[in-house]
Amino acid sequence: PPRKNTLIICSNVSPPQPVLNMRKSWIEISENCDFSLDNIPFGVCSFPSYKSSSSGVPLLTPSTPRCCTAIGKFSVDLHLLAEAGLLDELVVPSDNGVTKISNFHPRIVFCQPSLNDFMACDKKVWVAVRNRLISLFMAAGDEDDVIEPNPSLQNNLPLQSNSMHLLENTLYHLPATIGDYTDFYSSREHATNVGIMFRGKDNALQPNWLHMPIGYHGRSSSIFPSLSTSCGSSVGSGKMSTIRRPCGQLQIDASDPTKGSTYGSCKLMDFELEVAFFVGGPTNRDEPPTADNKEPIGKPLTLDEAANRIFGYVLMNDWSARDIQKWEYVPLGPFTAKNFATTISTWVVTSMALDPFRCETSAGKQGGDDLKMNDDAEELNVGKGDPTPLDYLKDPNYGSYDVNLTVSLQPSNTQKTTKVCQSNLKHMYWSSVQQLVHHSVTGCPMRAGDLLASGTISGKEQHNFGSMLELSWKGSREIILDGAEGSKEVRKFLKDGDAVIMEGWCRKEGIGRVGFGQCSARILPAIPFPYEVEEKIVQAATATQP
Image (cartoon, rainbow, N blue to C red; front, top):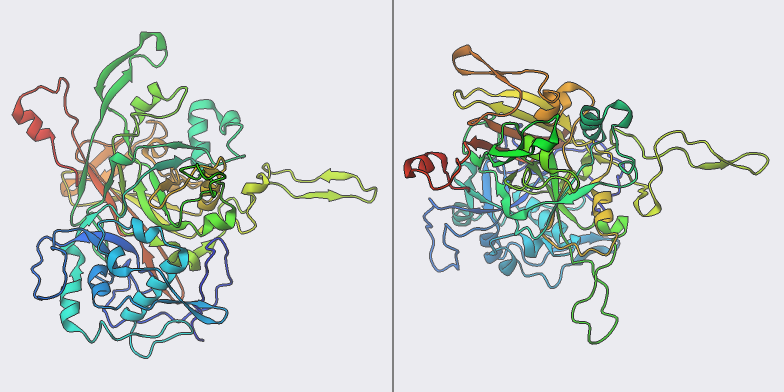
């Protein structure tokens, strides 16, 4: 049957999913490659080792970051496609056929060293650009109801040579200048596990948890890009980012808080498997009520508005220092235990690419049955489940995405990796749309490039747990890893030299693999205190963040 690719402005709606014919590209794409023709993610890249073969074309220097996309084993320079006119005269499907995109200037937008300007556009612009890129990569004769092949790139070999670079030769940068970063706590399974460990089964969830998405503000300055990507490569191969084991205050005696704390390096280093999304679209502001108001104030977002403000998603490792966190988190929550490093994957998978993978959450629904009336017209609350969300959070299209998530660990003495976690984005009680709505409920302005994270994503079974805290159950269980020459390594928390590799992807009949690339980093030793130590010690313990 013909492929249906109608424009879905509201990604919060889950349309019926027909059987689809997989799109074909003139670019070779392996079956297990994250970047199929059904993906078309966006990122920021540079190509320091590349020497341009053209002249007379306004080019950025190869080492200058610019906006790109990924297809197969290539990163593609959108700045050059725009300069060649391949992104002009964009259109989107509409009730009357197609609508032309106006006031969008791809030559300016895509030569920027971040995606912020592109993210700030309306969703119809994102859709139009993505559709045009699909058409440029689509094989001849593979048209569908919305997109027809455009041979302009396929027939231009010099442009291919200048604009298409192997992923392995690409240097990745943060996809956006992140203004604000908020981390939520939205997986019920994870929140329940942590609650049982520290408060017992009867008080696992705090009273407010089922009423609203719980979150806290993090540090955007310590969010770093993962240098690795994935296109059928083995887990843990290729480039690897690094992060530093933190130091801080550690409680001397957990049974006697009056003994205070001591300074030292974190002993309980942990990862957290998360998925984060970038906010896009125009900032939610009211018109100024008076002429002398210099800045309009913010306004709350509705569920539909929020769905259209989600640009796309990345994998996230929210590194955590559990022993530092335990001493400092009362009463205001985590602080230095979370602010030292957060690693994200660098290709942003759009909400449009994930729409075909809409699914129920592991909760199925939120709240009990609605109020019903009996024969005597008495109101009976027959719901015996969780509290029903308040109206501003009550989502008729409540759901998530069927994204497979894995975490593998690689000790420093081997190239072997051990998969320690298999989870899924559907293990979310509060959806990304609800998170964004609640964040804005006070009128908080949400700006393009803001990053909102899911919190640790855990399922019900032990192999679904998304942190070492849960996998080792607060250090009471051992996790066995493959080591060098057939040996075994034992972990309860992470050691120096360990690499954490996260991957995520979607797949279904008739649709190419939609993946995020790898989110990976290796742990470097802490810098000892006092900091004025011998230079050789500092050099041995110091590495530049990407």
